[in-house]
Length: 229
Image (tube, rainbow, N blue to C red; front, top):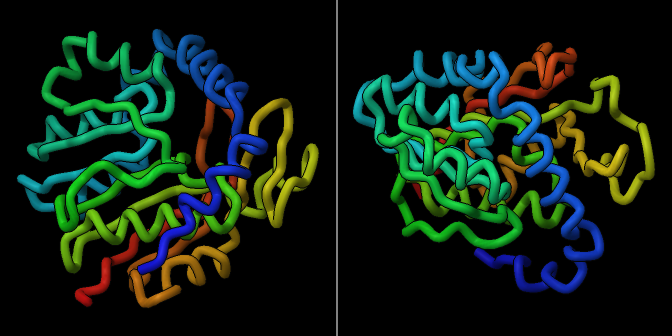
């Protein structure tokens, strides 16, 4: 499957510059010792209920590590990545997270894992920051690292969200507001990205309410199965 990661490399810094990294490092510092950090999210609970023990899981955008730690304690082998240097460094020094393999990764670049390495990929509110071409490459990479019939479970802000349309529009359904870039997913767009090139079959796709940093957000929640080729 062709990849446009290299083609995008020249234009991506004009959209995602060092300000995004500083922004997320600042967010994670702000929330690191909050009560919210110590509880798994509802998304992690849903994923855990659908997996038998002993699965190998890759989390993309682990943030505080709370979901990665929860999934590891449920009997899974968890690899967790994030763009934020602060989040990864703090997780590496957190005693309760010692069973998780944490590593720094920018999703605009190919995943550093071998093909068919994971039973499941989990991404809560981490895949909705890129223009369409990069988003599609990210899902190609998710397909590559998943085993046949492996699952991807992800949550993204939806086009029904209160923040949709706010700020500067820098691409289709892509906005920069208060310094942060967000790509809002519709249910139709989600289906299209997953079905393109026969990568995934959708198991479930719902629009629901999610609490994000203490505020209510409208999100698309999706579970899909990797094609068996």
